[in-house]
Image (cartoon, rainbow, N blue to C red; front, side):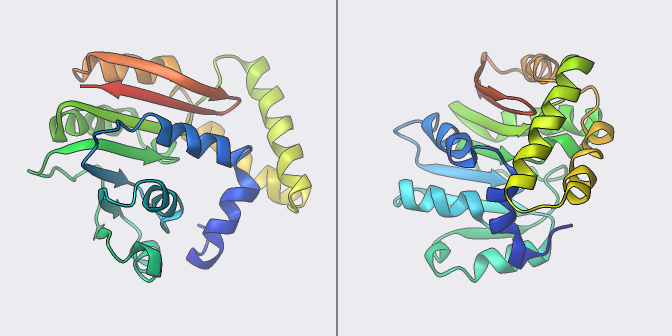
Length: 213
């Protein structure tokens, strides 16, 4: 696990075109959004972008890692954000949210946990609310997988990682996200009750899925 003090800089070194990825996440937050729940919020990398772009929005962050939560809580520009230490797989709030976000965490859940999480998120959204998931998804074919891994490793090495470090970070993803493709996650969201599901962004291993209640 990446130490909290290194996490924010690692985002920019590990995620190709990270600014486009996160800008796309924000693009689909409704203009009239009054509150946001960010799941798996980590050290607050995305949260800082949210606060900068949507300064008047009520934001709640949840992460299972206490070190990450405490690190984010100490950021002065996040003073108005509510932080909760907890497991998103078991989190079910009575409060309703206009938008629920998750970034780079779905790949590490089981199929059962992803299904249950989708159902809980649907329950916690207001009518007309939006769920936005930006995550790592398994490529649909072996050809894509091998090609994307080479391109990803090339990017990380260019950013300062050794070939061994890049390989060590990328190879385990095959075990984590095996079977969790964009199409399978779309089907899961359909079964959870969402009325519309779209995919506005896809680049190699990364994708963004937007689901409307």
